[in-house]
Structure formats: C-alpha cells, structure tokens
Length: 470
Image 1 (spheres, rainbow, N blue to C red):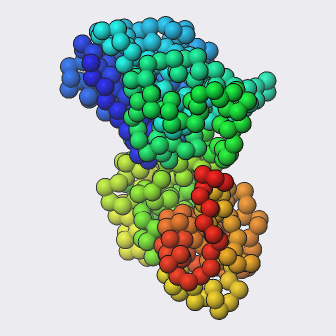
Image 2 (cartoon, rainbow, N blue to C red):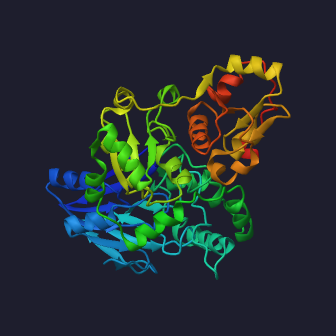
Image 3 (spheres, rainbow, N blue to C red):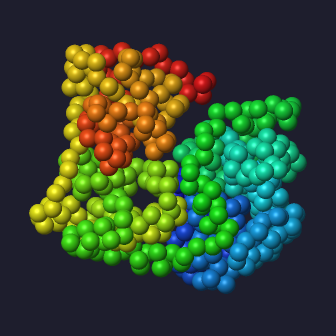
C-alpha cells in the first residue's frame, strides 16, 4: 500500500494518491490531472477510482477530466447529484482497491453530501481517514456554505456535530488524519500548519472534538468568528457539480503569446481585464494603464477568486518570463477559464512599442511617518478585519478598508483625496491600489513594507490583542 499527499500551497489543498497491487484511487484531484496519470504510469498502475469528499467550493476539482482520460469511476457521498456520470455511494459502502478497502462514511455538515473515506489496510485494520472538509487539524469545516431555503447554517452545524461524534470519534486513536486543507484555507477558521495528523491528538486538542461538548455549545463555537465566504465559492461548487471545459482546452486558449499591438487590440475588442502577476515592486514601477495587480508569488488564486467577480471575465496576462502556463493553470484552479493570452516580452515589450505606462508612488514607512506627523493624512488599512482589530495605527484619519470587500465599499472613500495605503507587508496594498486606480482613484501612495514596517517607526498603534481572542 502506498499513500502520497500531493499538497498545493497556494490553495492550502491536499489531494491524495493511494495505490495497492496495481490499482490507484485519487482523492480530491486538482484541475490539472496529468500529474496523477503520469505517477500511475510510472508505477505501472491503473487509476480505478476518483473519490470526491464533497462539492469543493474553493477550487475546481479535476475529477471530470481525470475520469474522461482514464475511465476511472467518480464516487461521491450519499445525496450528491451531478450532471455527469458518477457513482453515488451509500453510507458504509466499501470499495476494493488492490489489497485494501476504502469505506464511505457519510459525514454531512460542511455540505450535505460530505463523505469521509476510511482506508482499511491489507490486514483489515483501520489505517487512515481522508476527511475532506469534515475534520481538519485543529478545526472543522465551516457549515455555512450549503445553506438552502429549508436549511440553516445552524442545521448544518448540528449535522456536523453528529457526524463527528457518530462517525469520526469512535475510530481508533492511531488512525491517520489526511484532511483536504491546511492553514490558509478559507474553509475553516484556525487550521493547523500541519497537513497530516493522528486522530487521537485531534481528540485531545481540537476544540470541536472536545469531550462532553453539547450540540448547542458546538453550534455556537463552530459558527462564531466565521468571515463571509469569498464570492467565488458558490460558483466553483456549481462547476464541480455540473462540469466544466477541459483543462487542456483552457490551457491551449490561454497560453498564447501576443505582441503589444495584438494584446491591446484584444483588450479593447473583448473588454478584457489586464491582470499583472509580477511582484508588487515591479508593478508600482511601471504597468499597463488600468491593469490589476495580483502577484503570482502571493496567495494568488484566493485573491483572484475574491476580487474578480465574473468567472467568465476575459483575461489578458502580464507575467514574469516563464510563468505563463503556471498562471493560466492557477487561474483555472479557481474557475477562471477565459484567459486569452499573455504579453510577449512583458512590460519591456510594451514600453519598447511606445505605449503608455503608469506608476504608483511607493514610499518607505519612515517617510510616511514624517508625513503622518506633519499633516492630517488619510490612511487606508486594507488588511483583514481580524488583523485590523488585533492592532492598527492610531489616528482620526485612519480608515479600515478590507481588501476582501473593496469592490463593495469604494463609496466610503473620496476620489478627490490623497490616501496612503498599507497592508501587513506590501502585497495586498498594491492589489488595492491597482483596483482603486483602475476605478479613477488617482491620488494613492503605497507604504512599502506595510504595517510591519510602520511598527518599526515611532507612530502610535493600538495595544495588541491576540486574534484568537477576538
């Protein structure tokens, strides 16, 4: 028996490759499936099953493509309905994979069809669970994503309580836990940085598995402090349910080099969004007018999903050299399949063609401190709500404008005023500045290094409060 976790940091997502006696199961595959096919081929094994723990909301799974390419059977938990061929398993149904068995444990709560897959080894011993978004290390899945007219988040939280206590906690303490996500995922609140754990440890340390915890206590605790889900979650879940374009088609369409004149013509003809994925330092020095910055070296896919509201939006790319395919791939992972090409030669080619570029003023925190003391400057803190409440700059003209919801809150700031923007380290403030600049806010100054740099000055900040206590 062979188990491999294939972890993708940008999405904080774990897919799994399980092999026994020449047969393979893939659990929660990513959109680009060739890696699984190649691995099975190298092991002279056949992909037999594709197990989906639930309809993922934070990424587009590769299950449909992988099934078409390999003939493997897609398996969902009880109650799932799809627009493509899939096998809907019964609770406690077992599937043979070589010399091992995979048992379906229906664990509704995160979603109604959520399933945990119990791996039983060659000797009939419970070996591991692939818990999807039912159980994380340190947390459990948020129960507010599958709300329907006749079903509340409290109802789902109650189901999750029952699932954990009836299906997960009774399992042996030495069972290995392989969750779908780790720290950084928006599918839970306080996920561990570890990506593999032991069930016994979770029984001792995970608040949601606490002994003698009532259902009422669980519902209250699991629902407290949940931020609203990113806008793309429901759209990705629907793609996973009804199907999508082949990844190969998406990559072929997007991996096209365009000369500046072609790039500009397509941008105008298709009303395409120019997405610049270089570093924030490169972007502020010079970029195409009205381009939006979301750097590929940061939490790229989640920020794209949070800020670009239309999954069908035509997109043109400005990328670092050699990052073109990677960028198209990472966009497709969260459902943005309409990339139309990239700027050949990058921003240097654009400049060489004589076309206009724009810049964003960026200043050190020390310079900002001088301005802050001398004048009543307007400061925008674009960090998340919890970060701002934990500690922020003092001042009557300090305003919180969380990047997550910037599209909905631009009416709270004045286009005629000058604003100094900061986040924690400099990445998100440039994203915010690019969005505001594209919407006609021209008097923007970025604070390089963000709040971390500001704290090294003598500017007054609020007393630090641990985020976990908020």
